[in-house]
Amino acid sequence: MIYVAFDSCYAHPLPEGHRFPMLKYELLPRQLIHEGTCGEDQFFRPNRIDYTHVLRAHTDDYLDKLLNLSLTAKEVRKLGFPLSEQLVSRELHIAQGTLDGALCALEHGIALNIAGGTHHAYAEHGEAFCLLNDQAIAAHYLLAKRLAQRILIIDLDVHQGNGTAVIFQNNPSVFTLSMHGKANYPFKKELSDLDIELDKGTEDSSYLRVLSETLEQVLNHFNPDFIFYLSGVDVLATDKLGSLALTLEGCKKRDALVLSAAQNRNIPLQCSMGGGYSKDLRIIVEAHANTYRVAKQLFD
Image 1 (cartoon, rainbow, N blue to C red):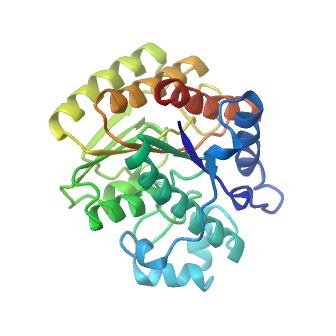
Image 2: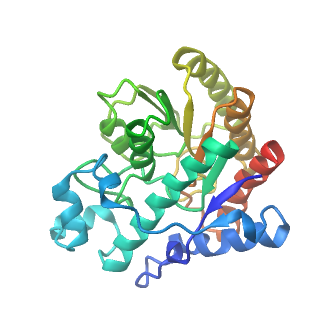
């Protein structure tokens, strides 16, 4: 059975002009329940995360600024969202959802977070809709509690996981793999343990071939005992902020490659949703729902 983190605050309302990206967090769980992919008993509601866990991945100064809403105007502009107490609370719940999901995955094999994948958040600042790096926080927790020793972060969002790369760049216990569009934000890339930059217009067949070969090599080389997967659907050809050209079916096959690789090797996996910015909201929800459908098929 798959388990899913979701809280109503994930769909936190924003001022006009910022609401569209948030709508998927409200619609996706409804769709999963409506079609029978998930039952209501498979959803768990995270609390606000303990600050101690956040501070394993982020600096005291940055967390203090978030909690006191004291970021400078320039720092707020980098976030892309208006800063508010509700927004910070949302991020703290999302981070706990990913941490809870990681613990759930250790017991059941897999868990997913309706939100998360906030990979542009660095230790000391946030940017591009990312305030706190949920998977970095959870990875640090697993290492600190000795629940994992070798963690692989598979980031397949169309944008490089720049914050994640820097947070773990000197940590041999975490291997960061980012496969992303060469032409996409961030235009100054950081250095992951392995970066694969894809040309504009890369389609299903090329993408899936590269991913399949890369997964096998990394899994054999690093031999992880836990996987965090960022399953951004901004790899679709329809995405406003992406440069790749995957179809819905290709994106679904991508998820199947990652999830089946973890299942076949009996490696627990936590999945966060990441980005998705197609103009048609139905496409975003369908692409994210496919991740859960694949998980149900493989792990139920």
